Length: 306
Figure 1 (tube, rainbow, N blue to C red):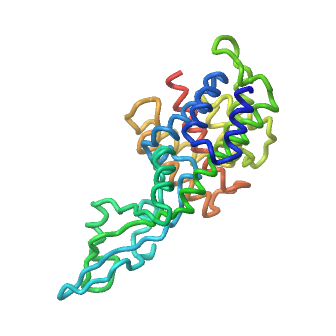
Figure 2: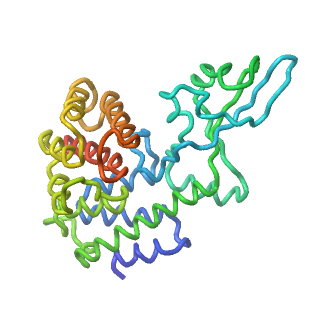
Figure 3: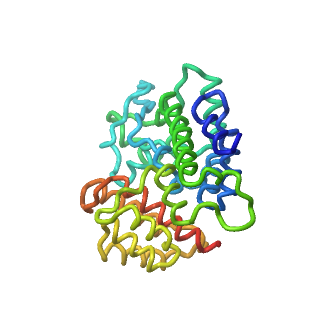
């Protein structure tokens, strides 16, 4: 059986553990000579180190948050819901979004070991101290606050990975049925521009977010984001205006980090742009543009190591 068919068979059921499926995807990524796919598989197997690297399916916006409180004469409230409006707007994503950072084996084991359990994702200690007397009843102190991670959230995330791998393998096979059997020497079995389009569409959730372009235009700008001019052109096609693009250039200059990854100024710019897209302040045809912008910026920085 070919590697592509083997991956498709494993992805259609749930009897093959996800780490096994993803290791086969790592082999495929190497044969395709496609570094973004290999990097994605590595993250899924070995954890994500930064929130900004997470694909959309690993971020759950506005998870339920509960807290324990203690008041006068040791009066207590246990598992009291904390509303988003109780915290400053700048902190809401950090404190109410659930970011699933671990590799897939961690979550598969959690689902297998605790069939009826929910999991807690605690607030960082600094934020707990900051909000200890600001989020509960008067004269009560919050001693613990956490986001709820449900079984459905974990299962849905793992199913998303299987679904995306399956779609990816099917589209690769449609483009070149022998791509999975390619050798590591010689030319890639699928041109880089087409490969990047397939990867973004199936793994990161779609690239049909360009307001004025066709699929071929998407491929064109994805191929050229290694340069600043190419990245800027891609952002214009998505719908960004010159002031926002200039702000990104300034953020890149402001960061003093490795040239292979975004620094805090660029990360802040991405957060700001994503918020503008979500609110409708930037006119794009699809809210997934935020994920595409992130993907293009990561590709731009990754090219520095190639």
